Image 1: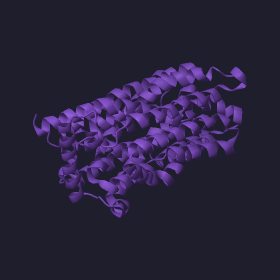
Image 2 (image 1 turned 180 degrees about the vertical axis):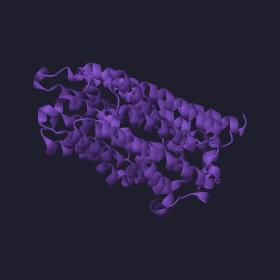
Image 3 (image 1 turned 30 degrees about the vertical axis):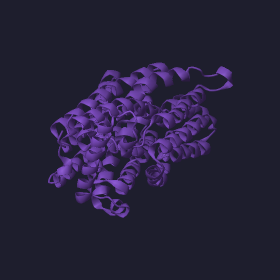
Image 4 (image 1 turned 90 degrees about the vertical axis):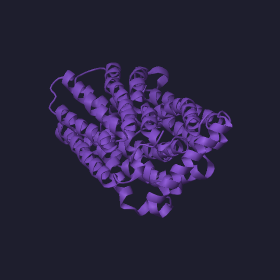
Length: 433
């Protein structure tokens, strides 16, 4: 077996072992983050939450992210992915279930903030963890497969959340309380499983042969050294370099759309007078298509070695679709427009992470990935908040959809400019197989 064959064999084994488990973890993670959108169908009236209060509360989650992402990723680098990812999952699962105790605006704000603190570092920690296992030329596909959990979370979680809301009154609890209570428990169980299942690095993997461990470790070490020469490996480099903040701005634009529609889509569909269970099934439709498109775009990006257009073009399509949805007068038109918008966002986001992982390594990767994710996720604070204020002021979602369209279009332009400015770097080309 040649060096390349051993590397590819190790990559295939790692993908089969790690990606399905991480996929399920991220599915549960995203569901616990956005199921508040389904809870709002009942919770807002029960607790007297206005659209502006709900939007701010949904978004305040990301303040916890901003404050604790970088320390969390540094802790992951120090203590290892197995221990730290397990800690994060157990913590957020407990807080997610405790969302059932919310009793008004103040406790709603507090619990959403605590959920962000508990969960901080999970996503950038996984992205960092994947760089420990997969060469650069595989990452768009691998990250897309992992992140397909996000749209699938809504495909699965939409109907489940809608069904749990039907438990309203059972055992003296509201339907939204049952939803939070039940949907938080899988995170705790998966966190305990992570302690047994995850392996920190290829050199520690008993499920790889000695030849596979050595070949994959050698390939990753060569790539890390190449990245160190053209990118950023140190803590302070990752914190101060303009290119990192450009990537954070690009991710911010993507996240504005991602969470803007993620938190509000159930209520957009509700304007057509549907019941919670039907809303749950209809919400799943755009995300089902998005999961397929996301993986196909990531695969094609790795196949061709092209990155910037694989990010920009889906964002432009999403922008046009959001603008179209602003004038939708029927449920069918609204669903088609929202499907294209959702697919555009998710097609872009998987390939996006090939940009920062191509210029960050070592401690710089731990810090830089967390910085990009935390600053970018402030879009998750802005998007839902702007939609809430707009809905409260106008009684409609039209102007909010135009705001999301503008954010995606701006992000597409940034992706093209960033790609053009970095095309000379070999890290952005496909790695040899």
